[in-house]
Length: 171
Image 1 (tube, rainbow, N blue to C red):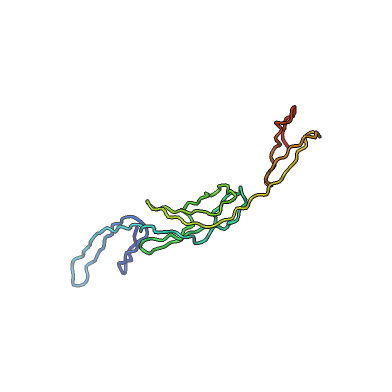
Image 2: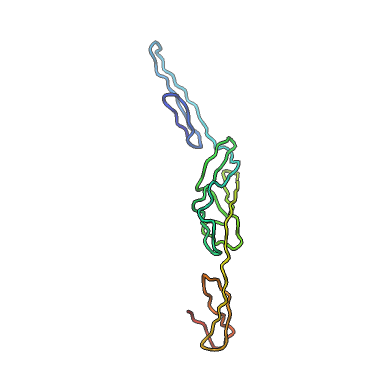
């Protein structure tokens, strides 16, 4: 919670909480008595007044369906007493780490909660739409074709519900 400089008596806060400090004065030449006193020091966290993006995440361009990552993101938290600190963890993002990003998402919201106070900041990202392709399936050489619109990151099974007597069993 606090440290005391043994030479100057200066107390320095090192964390939140309460500490009991006892000061001693030994007898000196001409004085035969020593003395001591005990007191408590309470250190409280100042009120969070705002946050700002210090550095956006390393990756700010995604393709739709990619997993969001906030790696490299740092924020600056500001407090009522004028203190500020840079944080690289302990905050939340929306979208959350690992969430699939959707085309059209352009903003990441970062929030920090301390006690009952929550502050937010945002930064921009780009999510590109995956191109779509028309694929025609010809099944067992039959003239029946099925057109499916698929993204370039995967191929879907053809819709064979309309073809009597055939069952699609896989690629």
